[in-house]
Image (tube, rainbow, N blue to C red):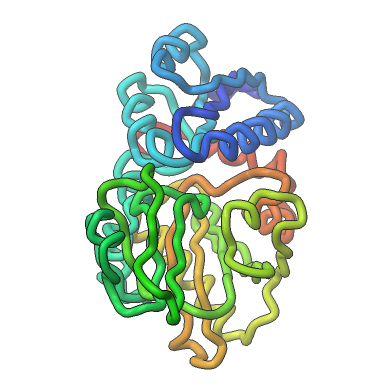
Length: 304
C-alpha cells in the first residue's frame, strides 16, 4: 500500500448478499475508526458499477467490509486484483475456500483438525426426508452470520421445511452440542478465546442485536481447551491461506473433554460491529478498534 501518513481508503460495504445490513454496520464502524486513525475515508456501497467507482476514486487501499457471497468468496478480491488496488483481509483463493463450508472442512481434515460429519444434499431432498439421523443442522454451504440455519432436534416429527430462498444445495451437519467458543487470528497471532453465552442458538439476532448474547473473555475453560482453540485457529488460518484477520468458531462438549472440541468454520471477514467478537478480542490484548482498522490498512496488498 501507499506509505502516505493519511492514506486514501475506500471502505467497501453493503452489497447484494443476505448479510447486507451487517456489512453496512461493519462498514460504518470501520469508516469511523479509520477516520480516527487519520485515514482519508470514502464509503462506497458496492453495486454493479463498483469497478468504475474505484477507478474514479483511485484509492490507496480498499478496506473490505463486505460479508457473504460477492464480498467474502473471492469475487470482489478478483476485481481488486484486476484493478491492482491493495485490499484488506484474505485473497481470492482463501476467501473462496473459507466461504465454501465443505471445502473448508476438507482442508481441516487434511490438517488433522476435528470436525463433525456433514454432507452436501439437494434442498428438495432435505425437505422430503431426513438426510441423516436427527439431531442435525441444515445450513447454506456458502453463507455466514447464521443466515438460513435450521436445527432438527432428536424428537423432530419430520424433515425441516426449508424456506424457498435456500440454495438448491445445502450442507447437512451432525448437531454438535455444547458451548460456543471463538478465536481471532491477527496476522500470525491467535488473540484469545471468547465464550459466547446465549439463551438459545447463536443465531443472527444473538450475533447482532445489543444484548443478544454475552461474551466472556478470556473464556473460563480448562487450559488445554483454551490452548487447543488458539492452536486450531492458527492452523485453520494457515491451511486456508488467510491474511489479515480471521475468526474460527468452535463447539465444545464439556462432558467429552478435548474430544468434545470441534471446528465449525473460519470467517475471513469477521463482523466489526459494536457487538462483534473480533474487536473485543483485539481490545483484550491491547489493540484499540482504530488501531485494528489501521493495522488492516497497513497490512493491505495485492497478490494475497
